[in-house]
Length: 272
Image 1 (cartoon, helix red, strand yellow):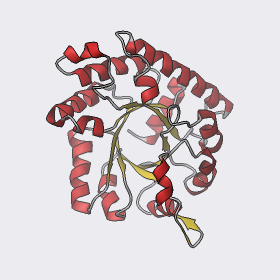
Image 2 (tube, one colour):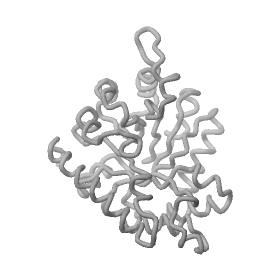
Image 3 (cartoon, helix red, strand yellow):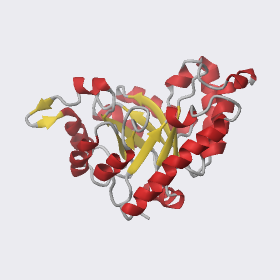
Image 4 (cartoon, helix red, strand yellow):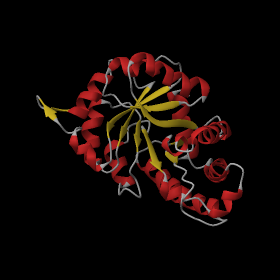
């Protein structure tokens, strides 16, 4: 999927919502457990309920890998079920030496046909560039995350430059805003101003809104650019909004709340 196609979907749906499909068998409604593939059945109903309200789905691979081959089958069926005009993110956080990264890239882009994959930059250019070799596919590079442990390394400062700033600057030598996005956590909205100075035109994948405490309005205030430039993820707040036979309806209601707020913000910042 191209950058312009993503922007078109944002304007069409008046939404920059990414729904995280972090499907946990211990949390889904119990009536689904009798299904042959309860993970896929749960995802299918969530997708049916929210596909017109979001522009992206982000399965976190840990929630599929934990179930072995059955989990991979559920993931494959889920990706095939998602409409073609919705941007798909493999939240895999891969990052290894070049030939291994090439295999990861083929797995996600050729086999599973994801539009993008999250990648850890710690091993440098040769661990990231194999993913960037695929046309109309995206790397979403970890830059500034929303977890507490982010302080351990990401704010380490050397020669007046924090580590996450080094990542942003260096990565611009590897790709561009047509194939490279960045993960930036919503719990640090004040940092978006500095990040936008370094990557003004890039899309940012923003976790941490809702259950983790991030505020959508603050993220937009500091992080939105002329094309919106944001994919804001909500996982638990949407997919686990209900736990009975009406769970998909509850998920839709939560997605509608977020989409309406996003529409207001898109109008406020003159994106639509």
